[in-house]
Length: 319
Image (cartoon, rainbow, N blue to C red; front, top):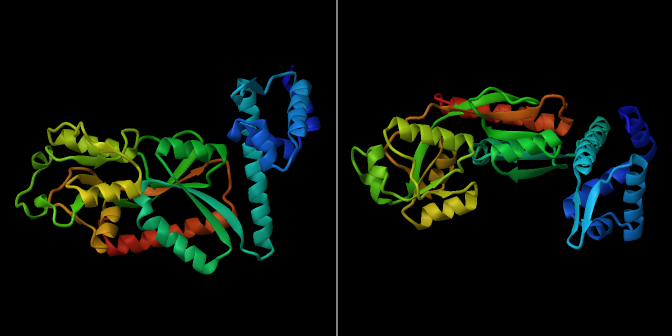
């Protein structure tokens, strides 16, 4: 089938409810479960998919006793279906904002560096002014969150930015810079040690971010500049709660962004060890999809993050 014929078939056959069905079947990997979620009968859902496949003359899903999985053709249709639905969602939010309702839903991908101060304070400011806006936070590594951003599942990714050239299709804005520090529980044996050096930390158990993160790459480079190998037996995790418990309940130590350590320190949970990790201050900011305008609600949240970032820079001039 030629591109023109595919276009005519898609325009003639696809409706928004079909797009939602394809996306939901992909998420559930099961037509029956997808039909239940969409309040449809399974035979009707199955027939809809079959009709689309017949019209396009392609198979969208492979069927097996374990469920369904999208074919290569299905992956393409589903990817664009998600983008279309995302644009419809943003259109509805803009219309609602114009009516003065100040409502909407924002999905924010957050990395560790933004999770302690920047993002929570910005959300608090926004909810005080626009309480009807719903905010969904997604934690993860940069590669996973950027994938969600490109697919339209995530509106903004916030956290430590890579130092490498900007990836295609996204653009970043630096809000402030932040050092990496070494943190441990209050009362840790090393917290009172004088003239503490990086070499003194090599026998310790560590909690570190995963290797694919920007933060971990900077930490590894700092170890190498100090003539040390990265601790081989480290626990690698992006779970804020798990990391906090590990550090509080054991003598493990961690390299983390300053604002994260400072939040724990103010709560009396952790302390900064008196040793400097030779890392440059890393850029903290937001990443957006290049070819997509933010909804009014998301744009307002971004403005609040800029305000909070200015406060952080005033309180900590090195930022």
